[in-house]
Image (tube, rainbow, N blue to C red; front, side, top):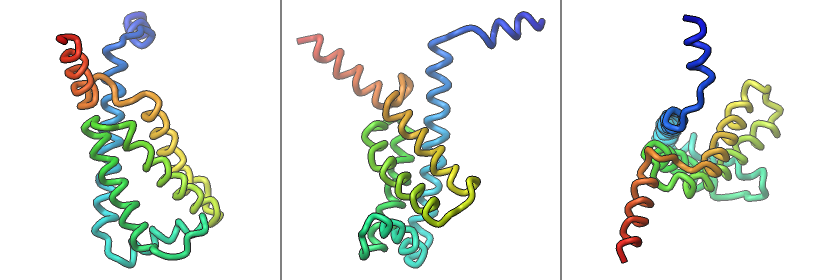
Length: 153
């Protein structure tokens, strides 16, 4: 019995890797979508506070706009991740957003337990930028359909 468990944990399966990547992408995307939705409807005072983090980079006005952009980036980026549609494209604004969030927490002198979450999210987003959305995604379906149509000509 133990040998079977050990063998199962040690085997390498491309299908299981695809399923694992898909589960991580969907779960992470749903989380981002919920966070973005909650921020988007949290009120102008909260959005202004969120947007004020951009002041660390020398921008001193338009905080409400940047708050809305941050919320929409999380919401739309989360939807893109959850569906696997334009995952790499969605990763670029998410990377910028998470760098701002991480810098905001580090500048405030927040504890590791506070800034670790945006840091972890940043690493995940960079991972999806590199790996893409995987085979169980809208990106893969669209790309494989285009590839098949190009072969017919």
